[in-house]
Length: 361
Ligand SMILES: Nc1ncnc2c1ncn2[C@@H]1O[C@H](COP(=O)(O)OP(=O)(O)OP(=O)(O)O)[C@@H](O)[C@H]1O
Ligand SMILES: [Mg+2]
Image 1 (tube, rainbow, N blue to C red):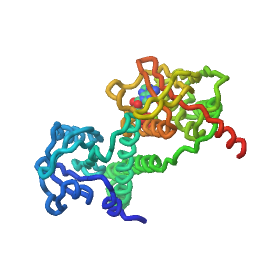
Image 2: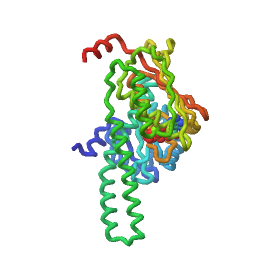
Image 3: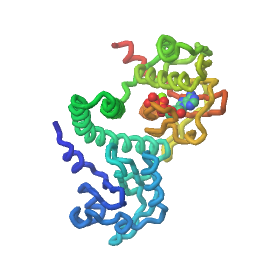
Image 4: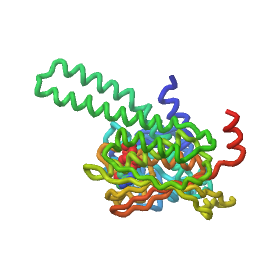
C-alpha cells in the first residue's frame, strides 16, 4: 500500500492545512516551493501574514469553514511578500473530521494555462475530485479506528448511553459510504467510444428506473426513430441517463410525477472551442420533468462536485454526468423553472470508422 504521506509529498499542487485560528498547520513540498520557504519556518504563522491577496479571501475561507463546504475562487492575484503577485486559482475545503481545519490548494494560472470554459469546468472538477480522493484515503483509516473504539466503549455502557456510541458508528458509516463514492468517481475510466443506439440506452434506463427508484414516476418517450448512431460509450451513457432520471424522481412530489425522454436532431448545434473548429453535436437527448425545479441558490453550480440540495445527497450525481459528457466531447445544459426542468445532452454522430469496428467485434 502506498502511504498517505507519500501522496501528500507527491501532490504537485501547493497545499496547506489551515487551523481554526487561520494559522498554517501543515504544508506540502509544493507549497514550500510556492512560498520559497521551509515548512519549519512557516508552521504556526498566520496565513494572512504570508499571503498577499487582492480579494476578500479571509471572508471566503471563513464562509467555507462556517458552511463546512468546499469553495473555489478563481483568478486571484497572490503574492508571498518575496515575489510579485501572480494569478492563481484557489480551492478551499474543510478537512473532514477536523473541525475548523481547512485545506487550501493554490494553483498558479500559468500552470492551469489558458483553457476554454468547458475544459476549465472539467479540470476544476478533476482537481477537486483528486483532492477529495486524497482526503478519502487519509480519512478512512482513522475513521475505522473511531468506529472500533466506539464499539469497544459501547460494551461497558449503560443502555441509555448506547444511543451515543450508536450515533458515532452510524455517522461514521455514512462518511465511509460517501468516501467510497468519491473513490468510485476517481476510478472512472475514459469512455470506450463506439457506435451506440441512444434509444436502446434510453429504454434500458427507463426500464430500470421504473423497477427501482422511479417506480412512482410516469416516463413518456418522444423519440425520433431516424436518428443515426451516437459516438459514445453505451455503459457510461446509461449511467448518465440513470443519474438524470434518479434526480428527476427524487425531486418529484410524493406520489410521483412525470418525466419525458425526448430525442431529436439539430443540424446547427456546434461546440465552439477557442482555437479549434467547432465540433458538430447534432444528437440531442432531453430528460424533462415536471417537478419543482432546481433550488435557485444552487442552479448555477449543480454540475460541481459536492453541490447538493438534498439532505442525503452527495452532490456527485451531476458532477459524474458532466465529467462523462465532457470526456465524450459532448455538451450538457440545463434549463429549469418550477414545473419544468430540462437537462439536454448533445452528442456527436458515430464516424464511419466506429461503425466498421463495431461490426468486427
Ligand atoms: N431534476 C431536478 N429537479 C430539481 N432539482 C434537481 C434536479 N436534478 C438535480 N437537482 C438538484 O441538484 C442537486 C445536485 O444533484 P446531484 O445529482 O449532483 O447530487 P444529489 O442528487 O444531491 O446527490 P447524489 O446524486 O450523489 O445522490 C440535487 O441535490 C438537487 O437539489
Ligand atoms: Mg443525484
